[in-house]
Length: 213
Image 1 (spheres, rainbow, N blue to C red):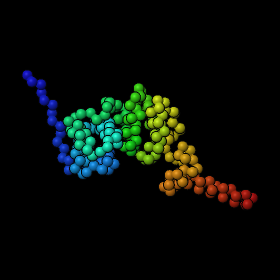
Image 2 (image 1 turned 135 degrees about the horizontal axis):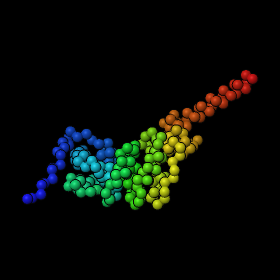
Image 3 (image 1 turned 90 degrees about the vertical axis):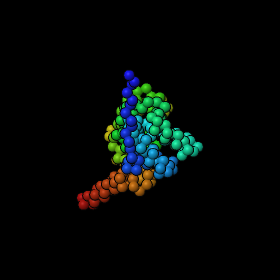
Image 4 (image 1 turned 30 degrees about the vertical axis):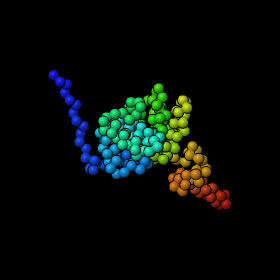
């Protein structure tokens, strides 16, 4: 008897399907039109197990393409036919790390590239996760990972994370005393400005105490 046919892929209404934020980010970066974006969103919705690796591979390939929109039509057809986007099978530990971390797509793409030739990806993502503890948003997470991904690309191991992770809180790793000028006014209120204000208030109280005595 003939082998049973595989069940057809579930039907997805492109117009009713919510646009995934990472598909939206990719679409805006490469100026994909609405119709192409909807088709890409639907194609990726059918590939949930490899979604993160697919998006990272697409991002990398479109960045290198002289005409991203033109190559996107080819990639869309490959997605719809079930062909792999990434040159390597996705690693479950890396997929899980990306899924739970607050990273922008550019950082995700760099992460996949940096880990491509690493033998112990599980240990690497565990170390990276420790460095992300305390990061409040995608910006902080990306800044914390940037030097670490460079080390991985150079074949170096990731150093131990500082206590409390690599995120905000006015730690020295975010530019020290000059951080407010480097990162804009929004960072002053969230980090450096607060502790400088506290120090000034403490000094004022100390001087008043000396005069009282």
